[in-house]
Length: 157
Image 1 (spheres, rainbow, N blue to C red):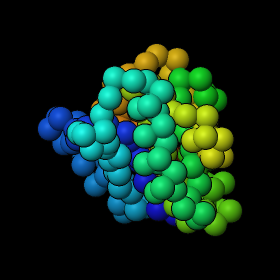
Image 2: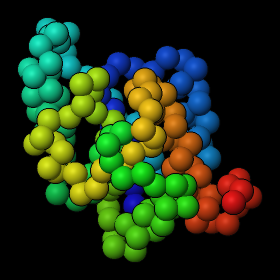
Image 3: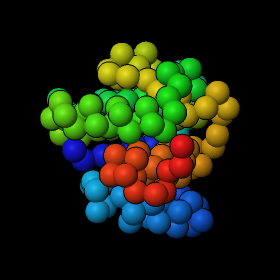
């Protein structure tokens, strides 16, 4: 199963990128993973929230393929601990999922159309984090999940 972290927004600050690459390097022996940035072209950026969500919806749905298993990350989603994340990954691998997409929506959330395409909605926390921090946190949690599945000493119960 390949994992793609999709994130609407601008490229990472260097310290976030460094952290993500650190975890991606640790994940690679277990699984393929990549970050996919979804950016609106400057000429389409607007302060109109509804219009922004529709433009972001178009970016997301255009990229979404039938073999993708879309999980939306949203503070109103189902709260899972790290062991439950790893169990979800194992279940998806057992089901033959080709590509798991972990979607971090835009600053205003995602449209209903995108929400309806998600097979699951998970919450990292009831707190709201900057998108770049979420990318780093998700990278760490993916590594943690694989360390749990592979019985490495990284995760302590």
